[in-house]
Amino acid sequence: MLDSLRSAGVEPYPHKFDIAISIADYVAKYNSLGAGEHLLTVTESLAGRVMSKRVSSSKLFFYDLYGDGVKVQVMAGASYSEVAETEFYKCHSVVKRGDIVGIIGYPGRSSRGELSIFARNLILLSPCLHMLPNQTTRAKADADCWVPGIGRNTEAYVLKDQETRYRQRYLDLMVNHQVRHIFRTRSRVISFIRRFLDERNFLEVETPMMNLIPGGASAKPFVTHHNELNMDLYMRIAPELHLKQLVVGGLDRVYEIGKQFRNEGFDLTHSPEFTGCEFYMAFMQTTMT
Image (cartoon, rainbow, N blue to C red; front, side, top):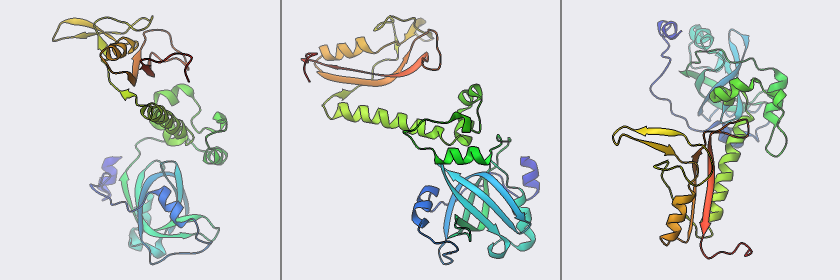
C-alpha cells in the first residue's frame, strides 16, 4: 500500500504540517456562523482522523474529521481547491477512512447548516493500513451525544467485542468515542485526590517498586530477578511499610499514588496491576474531622 502511494507521487509520511487550530477550538470559534455563511478571507489549518468519507461526484468530497473526540465536516470541492482540476480526483481518491490528514481551508457552514472547513488543500499525514470496523449512523449518533454522568450504552459502540476492546485500546478509542471520557474521568479523579491531599499539607513521595521482602498486605507477590545482584525481588503489593518508615523519620503527612501488584485472580473489577493511593498522618485520631 505504501509503495502504491509513493508510486502515485504521494508521500505517506510527510515531515511537517503546521496546525493553526485544534478541531475543538475550531468548532468553538466558528460555531456562531449561520447556514451558508463563508469566511473566504480567513485561512485555517487543522488535522485529524477521517472517520467518514462520502463521494458526491468526482469534483466534490465530504469527510468527517475527528480530533480529541470532536468532529468537523470537511467539504472538498474542485471549484475552490488549490489542487489542479486534473489532479483533484487523484488527490482525494487515495484518502480513506482511518487516515490522518491535514486540512488547509476557510471556515463556513454548508447550505444545510453544518459547520465545515472548505478545503483548499488536503495533505495525507499518516495512512491507515487496516480497515476500521463499520460505523452505523445510529451508533455514531449515540456515541456523539453521550456525556459523563449518564449510563453508557455499550450497544451503541461501533466495536462491541469486549476482548478486542481491552486488548486493542487504541482501536477502542479510535471508533468508540465515548471511551475517551473514561480516561478523562480517571485523570480528573486522580488530580482531585492529589489536590485534596496537597491542600492539607501532605507530601507526595515515591517508594520502591521492587523489594527484598513482600510486605504491607496479605497477598501473593510477583517475583522478578535482579541480574547484577543475582537475587530475587518482589514487586510491591502495597507501599505501607515504606510510608510508615517516612512517618517515623519525621514526615508527618505523606501519601503515594502509584502502581501495586498482586499475583492473584482477576476479573473486570480486579487487576493484578492497579493504581492505589495510601496516605498517613501523624497525631491524628480516627474520631477527628
